[in-house]
View 1: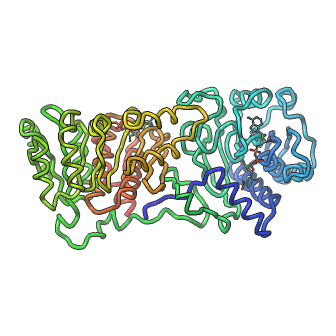
View 2: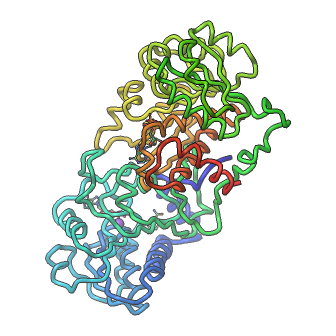
Length: 514
Ligand SMILES: NC(=O)C1=CN([C@@H]2O[C@H](COP(=O)(O)OP(=O)(O)OC[C@H]3O[C@@H](n4cnc5c(N)ncnc54)[C@H](O)[C@@H]3O)[C@@H](O)[C@H]2O)[C@@H](O)CC1
Ligand SMILES: Nc1ncnc2c1ncn2[C@@H]1O[C@H](COP(=O)(O)OP(=O)(O)O)[C@@H](O)[C@H]1O
Ligand SMILES: [K+]
């Protein structure tokens, strides 16, 4: 299957920790020691010359990790100053604090300012135990770290970032996180959490490192917790969970024979006169994805506009619903793409026969608006690719949940959307989230490729998915692979990208991944 490393929620992480401790094989203090030492190791890798560190330790286990970091850095010759809040008596954090041989100053801005300026701060104030927006002294400390021109290393996550939703608690959703803490480096444990990759997460975390602390044997992902994977970034997790192979698909080895029809055919419906560009981008991408035959379907009045390169594109006039139904009676018309530049009225007319044909299908742009206006049962193997506005038209109640601070977060909302509509749903944006009706989900962070937000990029994505569907890839896998190809094409091209470049960059991406 085409999947990336597993992402675990905070609750799953706690369940793994409990399972590990319950097995008797490892204690909480052991785990804390591994976690803290992993952070110290990453610091020493990046700052090889021992310097000064100020470690801020909160009252919970995140703070406990912090005392271990302090001890490990001090042993390596660092000059370490520790600020700490009182841990719960008898807790692992209290035990870790007792092992720290130096002073512990109060966890206050006054104490922070009283010491010499360090070379780096270690933020071990709050991790997965964050339950409310930081306020008072904690909020003041975080504001101080955010403004200081000194690198911050975050333990598990920057304090204040919800590691499930990716929202900085206390900031309105979607608000720029300019004044919030931005770590230079975040070291988390076992697997990324959704919040490292969603919303404010990527900017707040800086470089994300995932350290193995030996929890793998205690992975307790029951059937009620379907897989959530990271398509990008791909954190280095030592010795396990390599990105599963998509090479055969990229090499076109899955097909039974060598004929172009054996590689699948796709029909890309275009808009009326003057509105064919979006569908052309989608069609070119479907060809690059390896579909054997791609046909553009404009209305008769726009046919002449499509007598353009690439000559590899076929054309077939489709004026109305009956004409589409006739075209789809040809068994070779394998997969369908409806929406890019399509026009809402045309999509309203074509959606019913398209759904009736029960072919693998991508609905994008105007087809999504049409579907919102005239809800229609979808056939199996459908993929919907809305941006935020289209999503709100299709799922107004879920869009409100998404916008609510402290709400359920994108992954949970997308899972509900996919199950409700019975199709794979991909929500585009600076983080792309994909969910299938059976609960499988994936995240691709586009935060590092802002130049991908360019007109037509979504059309290319719709075409890529259609091309892979035409070749027989199941909808969730086709969508995940298309998103990875799309993102990597943007990454390899770099700034200055226009949507046409994405299409042309695909062969190099495929060549590198095969
Ligand atoms: N779960 C696991 O498998 C492991 C967890 N470890 C560490 O343990 C951390 C989780 O520890 P905890 O569950 O103790 O949680 P935290 O240490 O993240 O925070 C819990 C404490 O912070 C308080 N708190 C929550 N929100 C606050 C706010 N806005 N302002 C002030 N105080 C606030 C809570 O009341 C509680 O006292 C992880 O982030 C990680 O660093 C590691 O030791 C290794 C293994
Ligand atoms: N801020 C961003 N950073 C990076 N990529 C983004 C950002 N916003 C949107 N994208 C990506 O850009 C593409 C835009 O798609 P879409 O909104 O459908 O545009 P269009 O309809 O013009 O093709 C999607 O792949 C989306 O994930
Ligand atoms: K932290």
